[in-house]
Length: 597
Image 1 (tube, rainbow, N blue to C red):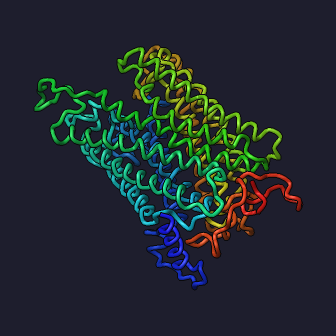
Image 2: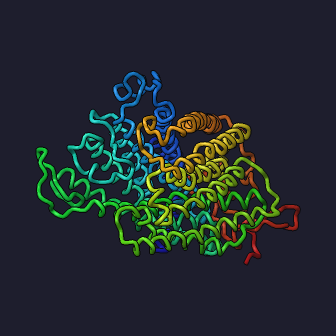
Image 3: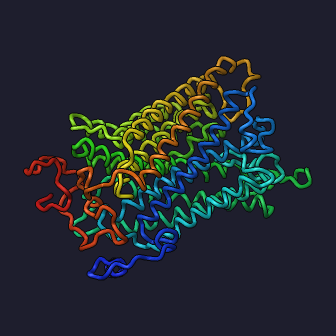
């Protein structure tokens, strides 16, 4: 294996001019489209994720307008949605489709592929000292499978029967019956095919990440010298490799039920409107298979953000990360326990109360390693020389939302309380803050921090600060009131609450939330404009290491070629967080400096 890795590095260095060979510029198609350079593939994941984030966010604007203004009409919606919003008002069918597609797009296409695909590809070779991934071709293929999944999902939005409408969890029997009127037509089949392609993409990427980290570290880069970003990406990849095949199996069985007359999930099969005798299927089986991925998926999303935040906090507080080994152990603990808590999503499914108590215990236990990480971040900030840069603001925002969102997880993780809170707005508030908002905070921190390494320029700081404050404050204004709606029993996914006397006091609150959603959504265009304009016109990075960081990615040229280092790969002599007086007027010591641990 080691000889193969050396041969791969030699081939890359020869092809890209890093061993006394003249650099040969690759053809446009192989540089920007079918690129095997991990840095270009990272940009492809990121830009595709941004496009999907706009689409998924726009869907939330549409259905929040329905919730906030149930008696009003919006002609602009008819222009965008056609027959699905006749007279400027969403149809109930399309309302459920928008909720389904919003959840699917944001969870899988943005916060899984967009976040993990971007930063795992960008940072793993750069921070471990490798020319590229273990298999550059497989890396390229992982992106194009993701792109194929995106195309199929996008097509599903325009089929005549409408997009999938069974919720992003696609529970049977609704999702398994083609005769069902809501979202179980061709749109549902395309939804399943798209996510099957997505799982294949994720598995290829995850295997590549694990192989690269374990086998292609530069000389001196022991596992105990890896940045916490790499540890987070490694554990994330392991979770994905072990859990995504289970999700794929659940989708394959659902495809069989829908198209080939099987009954894995159905206790009754309907033919010509008549029910055939019970043949033993179980909709609960699907829930077990889905949530065996569904809860680890939370950490597939959050762990990369945790790694990014750990790195950004250390760099911008000019202080070593507190409790490096405790951080690694807590990441490993989260990875292990994430596989033992899936059924807390199923407390109301009729499971044994004793079994429910076991999953309650596991759910509360997983809060321990999460709490350890929070204390480590706060202690890293304590008495640090904090520089309130835009990346640092988003990193601190991540810690805030992760704490507040995580604390509410104790409520829904309790099997007794969950009977009341299940499928209410409390659940929406909890997982949007802890998984959605927190992950976006980590993602934005990473983009602003590593933008100079990706594009050789800086993003605009003023726009960055405005983007942060609107996003941070707006997120709390959207989701915090939903906790109170949920405690009052307000169920989620309903088309219209105006006829319910019980929830009439929440009409003004729903209107307020919807207005803030619109403001926060359109404020994200500040980021998008900043991002794309800065690629071409941002302030140029004039040094390889603008943040004065210690890790290896900042030893590459400002705009590294394929192969990353023009000369030999640097050798590592110390851990990645030596922020201290270096005796020469500086406050950091790079990993490449000798006399390390």
